[in-house]
Amino acid sequence: MAEKTREFIWANLLHLSFDMWEEATARVPKDADARRRWVLNVRRARPFLRFDETLWTELLERMAAAGMNMVVLDLGDAVRYESHPEISVRNAWTPAKLRRELARMRAMGIEPIPKLNFSACHDVWLGPYARCVSTDAYYAVCRDLIAEVIALFDRPRFFHLGMDEETAGHQRFTDYVVIRQGRLWWHDFLFLAGQVERGGARPWIWSDYVWHHPEEFFRRMPKTVLQSNWYYGTEFRRGINYVKAYLDLDARGYEQVPTASNWSSAESFPNTVRYCVRRLAPERLLGFMQTPWVPTLRALRPRHVEAIEAVVKGMAHAPKARR
Image (cartoon, rainbow, N blue to C red; front, side, top):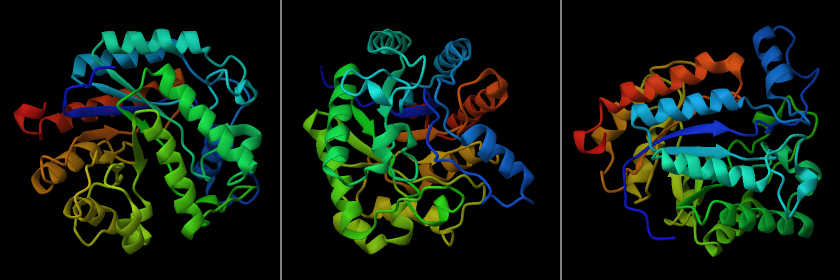
């Protein structure tokens, strides 16, 4: 594939698969009713595809009309992979169907980027292999899936590996807990990144590991890995660790796609753009990403539409050359 021109990124994360969390039951506090309903009824993995194609089409059209130019597509178990069909849910897309949708996105001016989250906190989509982390079987499956996805996407510019929230705190309500740390986390991450690079794509990850391990992160994280620090609040002060990470990554020479969300406020995205365009080196600021963090389902259409509208509002804060 010919090298793509460097266009400023206005991306949206959309889910083909939303199977990212292990089973969570009685450990969720009973007095946190809203959280309990969310964890038990929405976040919990299902053995069938949860995806509304009519809404998918509408969202792509809205994104194109808004001037957005990238979809980071969380694939998970929603594709019937030829290398490992055993992990696919019922009604998963065939590789042929995925290729047709990728061609449609490109025709609309939207660059599709694959995402497979290999964090042990978010890998329930791997099926039985989610309980084989850091074994020979695990490495073989990860290698196979990365290679197959890169081929399906015709060697994409980036490949998002996730790798966020692999902590005890983030798994405190789940029935099965896996945490890699220290040398093993780095071994597995560098293995995954190496497989992406072997296929001709560039690794892309969530950057939250830097929040609690900054010295180790900056010593071991290759500059070739694209960083997406994320912060979903609306108040931006250097004293906030999640905000400070944007500045630290920039000062250390990492290229970034800062990430916001309408998880708690629609103002998160425009405030992120306003803050970052004024403080980050333009040559290292590749763009911005929005993350609604809900399945692509008709009942959740308002959240998706709000997310796109927030991006439009955020674009107004960017230099004209980057809109």
